[in-house]
Image 1 (cartoon, rainbow, N blue to C red):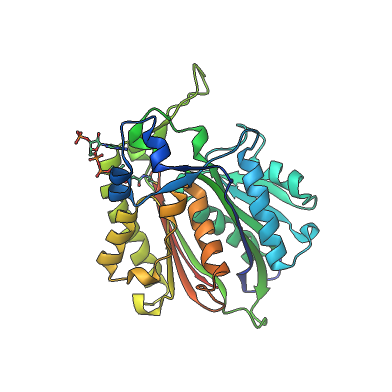
Image 2: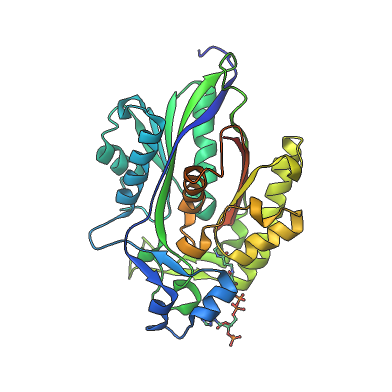
Length: 328
Ligand SMILES: CC(C)(COP(=O)(O)OP(=O)(O)OC[C@H]1O[C@@H](n2cnc3c(N)ncnc32)[C@H](O)[C@@H]1OP(=O)(O)O)[C@@H](O)C(=O)NCCC(=O)NCCS
């Protein structure tokens, strides 16, 4: 029986990785019936990074993990759990987390994947938080990694322009209530699903028939409307659960699916855009990687600082939606 001690999961390191190959809107317009103007106006996206030949999702995740470990200053052998949020695993099995474990040499860890599509990183963070709070793990690598370029139909202008590849990682460490950092860390996570709306956003690969590889299918307008409503619910929940208001928050790190969705949330909650961390213009939608990549960017350039209150929110296929409050 583990002793009943209150613990908090504190962020010790952050890392990110974008593959070097970059595709601009103008590049897309050479093969698709689209324009830079349309993509920028409707999505805010200007470019996206995609896998190079020979690269796979676990390669992106491993690079982000190495940077997060270096940032934390932790020996890889002290990591006891790796959770990877992904919908684009290297293979149906083994888990991409196990591939990352081998690539970074984290031989003392156990490793598994979480699939909650674009909400995946917050789901993975929540899972890691439970292991840390119960004492089942002391140090955890949480990674959001996706290579959406593997599953979009590059001939479909309605989806091909929206996605990109990348990975971001956090190193979390459990501290108990006697520790000086106990007030920092993950204060709450809130996870929601509604499987009835599966047809709004899905990949039509059928492993039973495996006739041919499937692609992302999306009812864009419906997803857009759902996003504003469901993200709103997730943000309201995280604020009320922690008894705080928008004014108490230093940074909002939203999932990056569309600049217009982020602006919609900003208007609805009267959150100044200066408090929103935005990467969608340069990364496009990297699914589970958007939030940790944005955290990496904003921590590296000095916007997010120690003790800042950071709200994370996301919505994606499933449908799934989620939020979290992290004191950095
Ligand atoms: C996909 C999205 C950008 C489309 O923007 P929109 O303003 O809703 O545009 P619509 O889908 O209504 O399409 C408007 C027109 O643009 C066209 N269009 C679609 N993609 C286009 C493209 N890449 N280039 C040019 N025209 C395009 C459509 O065919 C449609 O033409 P029509 O009016 O002749 O029928 C937007 O709906 C969106 O971002 N949805 C949410 C996406 C999301 O969050 N996905 C991930 C969830 S994690």
